[in-house]
Length: 351
Image (tube, rainbow, N blue to C red; front, side):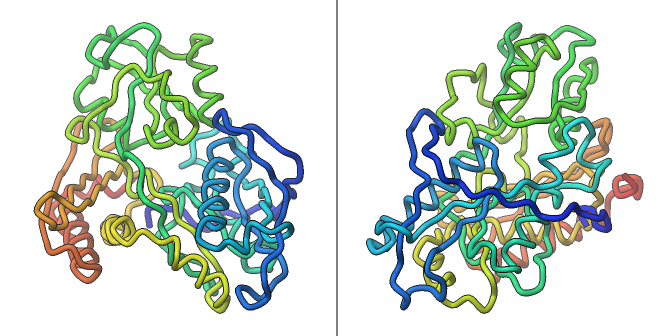
């Protein structure tokens, strides 16, 4: 599968958020609130999240939406944000593919959810493996942010302006393959860390440029760093890029009711399509894959996907249009993935 399995994960470590903090330029409070017993089985709804500034911004967004939709959740003691440090957060000096793939950012949070340490878990959907742990469900996607990537550089206005041998910092094989396919004279080197860390490394001269997701910069109120926004045709986004997913325990009816009120169905159907594509490809952590589904102006589902070699020398693309329903979304993603896998060179799936 796209996400590697089999890595023994470190034991989950949870931190309770208690002090006020400033995230994305906005002062936010981490105090808890009280909820009526009829809404959930526990006294406090605990929101599990990673501790990066972006992850916290997304958790606070979820908290605020819950308060807006359920006034009782504005009462003291009703909501609590619990920070969970994942293995992916601890190991920053190696490519994700070398240490087990993106599931590294969800395993400890899944454990906390299943153990009851948290009631709901907020994820960046592109970090979520195509499989979910038994006993959990992901019934909610918040409205999707802009899915495009951005180019950031202190020395050039566009990738085309970078000289031969210039280093582009990126930990994404998807970005690497698409960059090298068009600009084979450039070098792409591993570049991990949160948004702030990557921008600091860039300014310190670790590389000439980097690519980041526009969605994250918008949520962090950091769009002033953007040099150029890359259109979809130039850089097809990662599966589920820009989407936030919220999981809960399968048998937690209270949390499921809360999440049903927050779900954005258009986003959910698009994500379902993209994840079906990813599942059908059954690529490894070393297979560059991109996919994007959306509702077009004609009201139909439009999907584009690709799979490539890391060096960008081979890229296969596919696209489809279908009715915008969940059933068709699954079918489109599955058929697109199977098409590329059946017709593509075997070496595309050997990475």
